[in-house]
Image 1 (tube, protein in one colour):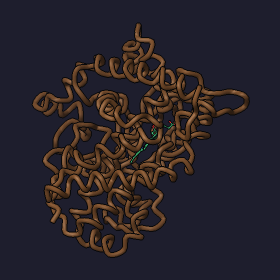
Image 2: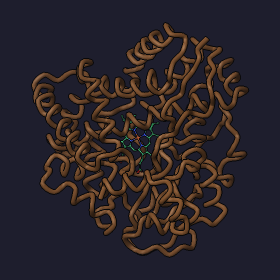
Image 3: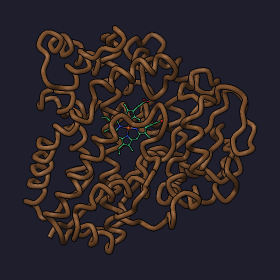
Image 4: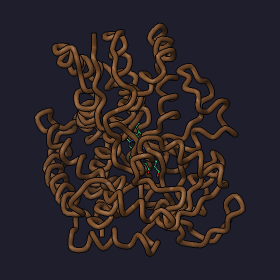
Length: 421
Ligand code: HEM
C-alpha cells in the first residue's frame, strides 16, 4: 500500500487526469509545491471546510477552526480506528520494533497513554536542558560556516540546515559524535512517519531503520542506566511521575521520534527562512541592522513559511465544525500554514515582517500535542541565521530554490545555493 501511494504521488500526468477527483486540492502537483499559499487561499475562499474526495479528508483553513481541531476532545491524533488508515497497523505485523514504535509514537496516540509518556519526557526535555546546548551549538554553527567560507559559496540545506539539527539532537540525547552519519540516514528513512507519501521503496526502509535504531539504542540505554550523564537519555531514564518511569520500549520509541520530529522540521525552517530573507531584501536589511529582532524574525519565518503545513485528526464522535457535520472516524486536516495567513487573525497576513508582534502562529501546533522541541528549533534557527547574516552580510542567491520537497506535509527547499561574498 505504502509503495503504491508513493508511486501514485509521482505520476504527474495521471494526477492531472484525475483533476475532477482532486478538485481544488492536489498536493502532488508541482504548482502546489511551488506556491501552497495559492491553494490555501482558494480553499479558504471556497468555505471554511473543504472536502477532498481523493484524499478522503476534510481540510479546515481558518485559524479558529484549526485551533478547535487541535484542542477539542472531539478530535484525536490516534487514527488507528479510521478504516482508511488500517494499512499502517498492518505494516507492523510481525515487526515488533516497528509495532512498538507505532504504539508509543506521541504524535499518533492520545488519552492516558499520551499523557503518561508526554508527562515523563517533558520532565527530562526541559527549557534549561535546551538552553545548556547554546554554547555547543554556537560552536557547531561556526564550524559549519567556516567550512563553507573556504569556498566562497555554500548550499544552505546540505552545509547548514541539514547537519545542524542532527548534531543538535545527537548532542541533546548524548550519543557519540562518530555515530551522527547513521542518525542522518535513519532520519531520512523515518521521515515517512511524518509524511507517508514521501520517499520510495514502501515500508522496508522504514522498518529497517526502526530496527537499526532500536538495536543501536538498546546497549546505550543499559550503559546510561549504569553510568548516568548530563544528557537527555539519562534524564529520560531517571524521569519519574506518580511512581512510574519510562520503560525500555518507551525510551526506544521516544529516541526515534525525537530524531525524526526534530530533524526534518528544523532543517526546513532554516532553509525556508533563508529563502524568505532573500525574497524580501528590505526585511533582511532591517534584521541585519538589528539582530535583536532575531527571535521575532524566526517566529515570523515559522508563520510565513510553516515547515509543517498540516496535521490531521480523526473525528472521535459525531460533531460539527463551522456548520459542517462530521461523522465518527472521518478525517480532518488542520492546515496550520493556512491558519497562519488567516486575515481574520493576522493583520496584513501576506506581509513578511521581521518585527511582527503578537505573533500567535500555529506552526508548532497547539493543545496536547504542541511541539515538544519548539524551543530547541528556535534556538537552532536563531543561531544559524544570526551567524549567517553577521559573517556574510553580502550573501546572495535566488529566492526560488531549484526544487521544493515532494511532500504534502513538509514545506522546504531541496537546496538553496548561495554566494557568500
Ligand atoms: C521548526 C521546527 C519544528 C516544527 C515546525 C515542529 C512542528 C511540530 C508540530 C506542528 C507538532 C504537532 C503535531 C500535531 O499536533 O499533530 C509537533 C510535535 C512534536 N514535535 Fe515538533 N516541530 C519542530 C521541531 C521539533 C524539534 C527540534 C523536536 C525535538 C527534538 C520536536 C519534537 C516534537 C515532538 C516529540 C512532538 C510530539 C508531541 C506530542 O505529540 O505530544 N519538534 N512539532
